[in-house]
Structures are given as C-alpha cells and as structure tokens.
Image 1: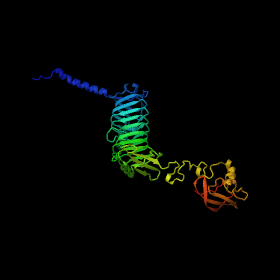
Image 2: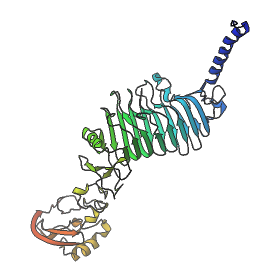
Image 3: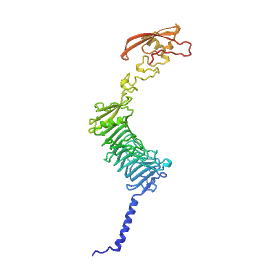
Image 4: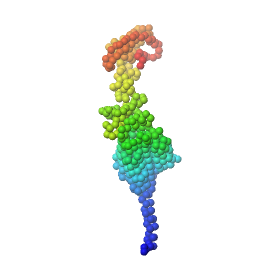
Length: 448
C-alpha cells in the first residue's frame, strides 16, 4: 500500500514555489535611468536610480536624460522616451533580448513620448526580436533611429512608424534584417507615419511592407547606399506609400523588372533628383524608364550585376551638370558652358566678348573689335561714344552712327565649335540711338 506523503513534504511544496517566484521578480527588475546624478555612461552604477547597472534579465527604462554606451551593455527589455538620446559609440555593444521600444516612454500630453537612438561608427546593437521606432499611440510625435556607422542586427522585425511616427536615417554602417521573419522591414506599419532615408551604408531585409493598414504614410528615400531585399514585397506596398530612387541602389531578389514597371506606372516608385552618372556604365539594362521631365532615367538589370537579383539605379540625364538635359542641351560636353560671370546673359565659353571691367574698355574696343572688323564710332558723328559699346554680341557689327540712329549689320553665322565661324547671311537694321537720357552706357545685342 502506498504511504501518504509526510507532513514535512506537504509543507515544503508551497515554500519552494514561493522561492521560485521571489527569484523571478529579482531577476526581472525594472531599472530607471537616473538623469540627475549620472555621468551619462550606461555602465556607471550611479547612472541608474537603483545604483545597479542592468543585466540581460532586467527591464531598463530611459525616460529623459541622454545615455551613452561605450562598452558592453545588456537588457532583457529596453524602453526609451522623454526626448532621450541613447548613443552607442565606438566600442559599444548593446544587446536587448525581448523588446527594444524607441519612443514608448514619456508623456504624450507634454510631447515627451519620443526618443532617439544614435549608432555611430564602431558600435553594435543586437536585438533578438523586433524593434519598433515610434511604437505606441502618441500620434505626431516622431522617434528617430540614426545610424551613421556600426552594425544593427535584428532577429525579426524593424518597424519604422507603428503606433506613432518613426524615422530611420541610415548614412553609414550595416543594418541586418536578413533573418527569415516575413517582411522584416515594416515602414508605416500602423497608424503612424514611417520614413526611411538611406544616404549611405547597406540595409538587407527579408521582405518589406509599407503602410500595411492604409491609414498613414510610408516613404523610402534611396539617396545613397544599397537596399537589398530578399524575398518578395510586390503585394505589400499599400496606397500612401512611395519609394524614391536617386543615388542609391536597390537590389531585389529574383527577376523583378515587371514588378518595378508596375510600381512606376502606379506611382509608388518615383524618380528623385539624381547626380549619379554611370553607376554601371558597362552593363546593358533590361529595361529603362525616363522621368516625365526628362531629367532622370531609371535602369533595371537582372542577374548580371548581382546574380539572382534585379538591380535598380538612377542616373541624371544632365551629365555635364550645366542644368540642361542632354537631349536638349546646346553645349552637352562642358559643365561651364553656361556660366555667366560677366552678367551679359551669355555663357562665358560661348561669349563673343568674355567678361571685362571698365578699365579694360579702351583696349577691348581698339584691339578686339577693330581687329575683328567691327566699326567703332568715336562720337564725332553725333552718335554713341565708345562707352556705349560695352557688349556687342556675336554676329552684330556697328556699321555707322549718325543723326542719333545706329545701323547694325546682323550677321548669321554657323559653327561646329566656338573657334571657327562661317557667314550664312548679313542684314542691315537701323534703330534709334537714344539721346539725352541720363544713362551712361548702352549696348546693342541680339535677343536671346
């Protein structure tokens, strides 16, 4: 016959349960950041109100006051807010196990439900689950994740703009969201607006979705760096989303030229102002698109630049930088063709009479004009003086001045370059020479 449990055994069971519960509470303590008596360093005990630095089993809350991670830092759950800036500098290694909520703490009534995380060169942040940037319902209060260098690794999702507005600024370093958690990059995923600005560095994600619930706005500005998307996201860009491609490069796994074409047609992918010229000059793209103003061309290449991926990039159609698209450019080869330093409304390199000042007027008239068969009136005929002839344009000759009238010979010339001209036609035009005005200088020129 089985013996009943002894009284001592019955008494030990509840005592052991209480011991386990007490241990659990101690290992998951909530530690508040102390912004009064701290030096700002995460690993200084006085930086925390409890006088203890958080461990990997603690809940760390930074609500006001800036903090810096320059060594190893751990938390089970990490929440920022209160306009806090949390900086991870070179040598800093911050790990959060469960939650990393940027901008969750604080009070929306006084506009402190916001925060900034700054990752600098040489720093690392590792998050094993997801990171919301702009997490809760404080609409209109933005939170920022600024990455200038270093490495950010997230095990599941990075949500930029969720319950409130969020902004990711990537100017350098690496963001690794490549773990196969569906749509690892989520922009404007909830009611809050989401904005991703990439000007440098690399961001790799498994899938992507934008403005999933259709109530906010989602923007991705690819102004530099590289965005690599593994998997598909063609059905996950909702109304109110925009991808603007400029100087950055989009790498999308698979042959996505038709998907890109559909997104351009629908207006979800747009052309930003690009200064890039010849990212891949030796490649022949499968498809091209030209912006409505002709300023930018978007190119797509599959499987050659990166095997198994469609590579998308933009190029300016003004390769000489003179402000004119090449297809309508008068001087397509020289960025300085249209500089006008002498203020005569003619580009210097196409100017018959380059810039000069008043002290050079006499040699200009007596040497340049006369050597080039211009007739200069010295004022004895009652017409204009030398000072009236500051800026005659190419193809205009002053034939004579008398009775306050000037007869101009308009010569139409042609040239393949600016050094050798041939005459096509010459016409004489007589115009009044204004007399008796208070103005000291006059000029005759062809209308632009």
